[in-house]
Image 1 (cartoon, one colour):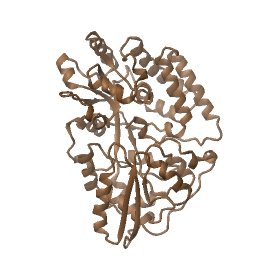
Image 2 (cartoon, rainbow, N blue to C red):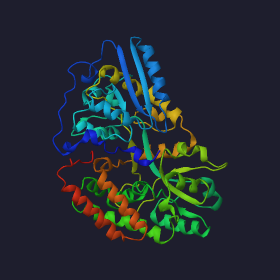
Image 3 (cartoon, one colour):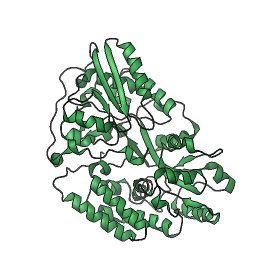
Length: 451
């Protein structure tokens, strides 16, 4: 599971050339679950299509079986695969989508919403929850729920949450008397000690530069300039990509590189190759998401361990040192769903605290549902869950699925800097030029970070 699976790339057949135009208004039905009403009875067919990523679809299949037993007149089909969006594309174009979809990272849900393909689930969220007396929306962490909003409407709803940070082997650190660094100065001092041992201090997934963007560049921009500096960059405000905060973040990466603290050759490594270098002890730290233990469990050497930490804070920064980057892969109900009542009620069931706790225990990842944090997590997930719980600032990379071509230019520029072809100043100038080109492109709809 690569980190770009957290956010969704463009589905051009849905976005079309009209993605820069006005969105199509789609009213939710005046009755039923989509209007916040409790359906009297659920019957007929319910088709659920789900992305089969690192967590599989077995949980959704089991939930469907349980839900079906409560509603014997409802026939539920759950299907999915690792590239489910490819099957969904012609279904949406042909006005014959499934009733409930978890389409995965290859689906541009913002374009789908803009084209009137998705129901506004805001009224449904104001309806009763599956458990308790409150509204369905009260089941969710509001800071995560807002990531599924566009122009004030709720087109997508989160389920599980992925967290990004750095990973290290606590056994290796304890053996050498090393302490996980919390600040930039501590990081530099530690890297010198690690390098002296003949170990690469930090490896990275060079063929997929967004790991470093999400693990270093953007967190350090936030750390230096506060969340306002990062929001300005995502919102494409003029000059934001060459601001003092962004430049300092680029300079920090460049300093690690110039001092030999980044593993040589990592710029050509895939995600699994770099992560294998970490597991084999040839690198001490690696940026990655909370899926790392699951993704690499088959390659874990005997005795190896891994532990999560937040990126070390920048010196004299204005940002929140507890800030944590999250990602979601949301669920949604198409406007052409044949059984929206059943789709919404089934997803309500899955997002109940009881169901969400089961998911946490089975899949070892946090969810966006309140109450699920009480579930028993495996040891390796305790630290990321604690960081998430204690964070005062939760943020997400949102520009990536809004402006794919712009994102590609950032990645290319970062690779050039790592290869010594660009200075940090030239990197920022190149990215700012790409941001200006994106700002001036009238065919692209412009977005703002949810606040």
